[in-house]
Amino acid sequence: MIYKFYNGSPDITERYVKNILPLISNIKEFEVFRNCEESPYLVIEDNERLRYTFILKDDMDNELWLYTLCGYHGSGPNATLKILQLLGVKEDYSICEEGMNHIKQRNVKPVHKLNLLTSQDKSIKYSDDIEEFHFLAEIDFKFAYQKSNFIKALESFGYLQHVTSVDKQFFAMAYVFDELDTPSPAYEYYYYTNNIIKFNQSFKDFSSEQIQIILEALTKHYGGEFKKKLIFNQGHVELLY
Image 1: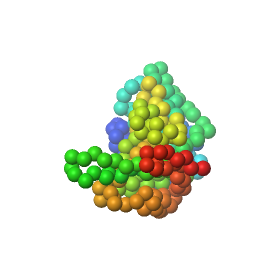
Image 2: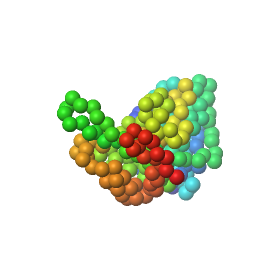
Image 3: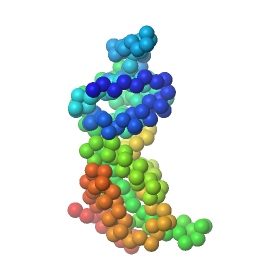
Image 4: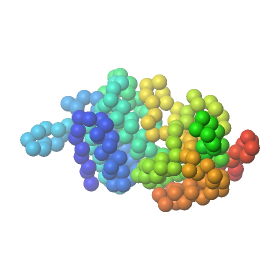
C-alpha cells in the first residue's frame, strides 16, 4: 500500500504521519531530496504535477510518500528528522547539513525503546518543591504506534520531560541510559528515548510498588515489554540485573 500526502506545511505533514502510525510497520529504507525537481516520484493529480521528496518503505512493503526536504537548516528538513525519529530511526544521516541534496538509506534499524525515570511530586504546600525518585524502567515496543500511544496515555499521569547528558543531575542518577539521544551539532532531538515521568500530586500517596504496577499494566496494554533497571532507595542507587 502506498500512502501519499502532499502538503507544504511541515507541521501538518508530521501530524498526518502521527495519525496513520498504526498503518506503518518498521521502516527499512528511506530516500529524501532537497530539490523537488530532482525527485523521480512524480504523480499527476487533478491536472497538477506533484513531486514527492521524502519516501519511506517498511518491512511489510508499505510506502509513505511525503513532501519534506533535506540539505539545509529549516522547517522542511526538521520535519524530516521529526518523522524519522517518530518512526524510531535515531541516526541523523546529516539531514540538515548543507550540500546533502539527496540521501538514501537501506537496512534501517528502528528503535522503539523508552528509558523512563519515575518520580513523584511530594509537595505539601504550593510553594514546596519536593520530588521523590523511585526507579528506572526500560520499556520496549515492537512498533512506533505502540510507543506513541503509550506516551499519550502516560502524559495523563503527570509531566513527561526528556533527559540528555546536559541534564547532569538526572543523567547521573540514570547512568544506564544509552547514547541514542546524543544530537550532532547539526540538529536536535524531538522524540527522545530517555525521559522522566513526574507523577502529579494526585498520586503523591502512592508507593513505589503501586507506581510500578500502573506502569507495567500500561506497558502491557500497549504491547510493550517492561523491565526495571534500577531503584532509588534512601538516596542510594541499586542496579538490578
